[in-house]
Amino acid sequence: MVLVTITEIAEKAEVSRSTVVRVINKKGKVSEDKRVRVEQALDELGYVPNKIAQGLKNQSTKMIGHIMPSSYPNPFFARVSNAIEKSAHDLGYSVLTMITDRDVEREQKMIEELLGRMVDGIIFTSAFSTEQIKKVAKLEKPIIMLERADDITGVDTILSDETAGSYAATSYMIARGHRKIACIAHEPVYSVEKGRLNGYLKAVQSFGLDPEQYLKYVNYYSPEQGYEAARELFGGNRTDATAVFVGSDILAVGVMQYFYDVGMKVPKDISIIGYDDTYSGMLAPKLTTVALPIEEIGRKAVELLIERTAAPELEAREVKLVPYLIERQSVGSV
Image (cartoon, rainbow, N blue to C red; front, side, top):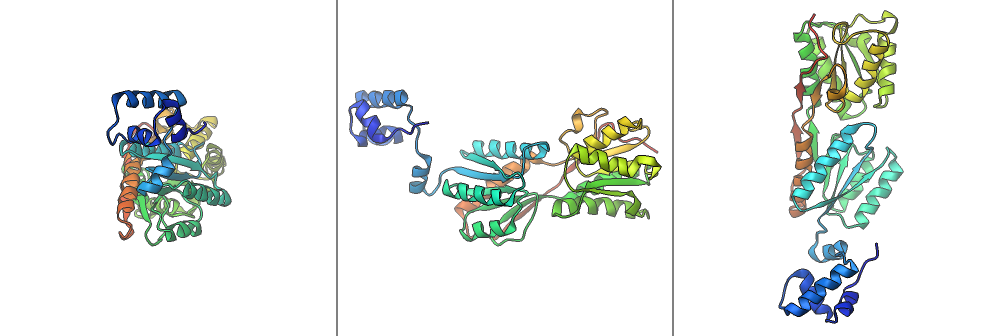
């Protein structure tokens, strides 16, 4: 795209630069004849307003940066991105989304790119480098962190109560008579994974289960890792679990494929609950899962960022949203 200047528009319409500016900004008096000529020139030359230049004048580009680790294969991130885009659009903002592919150096370059584009603030979904975020915060650029929390001065966070979500899921299976409940989850490195594990542990330990032999960790969210974890946990009758809580739907895809391959019927032979409500409605049988309020997460992220833009002196705020269980067809009774 070639940017067209005010001077080129003025020459095309045979008017002064000031007349073009008045027409574009819809301010000041312009004769009908000149207005029509300017609008025709704008249309013919394909004029696009320079948002960055306008932002320098107005102290706002109405553009928000969004940095996230991936958009595939885990649709959770794509859904969060869509929720942010929609909420920003409703409030008159645009979003520039960048994907780090879980690379710290790439994340740093993307931060620099967004700052160079004069974004009003940056939303991080599952940020990797706390040090980089601290550097941005020192520039007094509004920052919102989603999903993973770090205690950084002036940085707002939006979290889901993961412990409550996994506790509700595990308690649901307990209420259906299950007592030997396995867990397949990501290693508890970050706050999200720690919360999901803690909710499971809190529920099963309440009736005396030693979860050690029922736990299996993965180090990446993928169907393949879910499949392998299920094979290692359930292969060769290594566990007598009647149910399994899986820390993400994308892992549950692989777990359910393993059950299918070895002839274990869900929920007749084994019950299963997932987390995130991404692939759950497309599986057979449909997966009972814990859903996150993603639309609310996106809306809150944009609102907090805009509020901090207007009042940067605000104390750091933490918003914790409550996930909820969606009952489908993958849990039977004992």
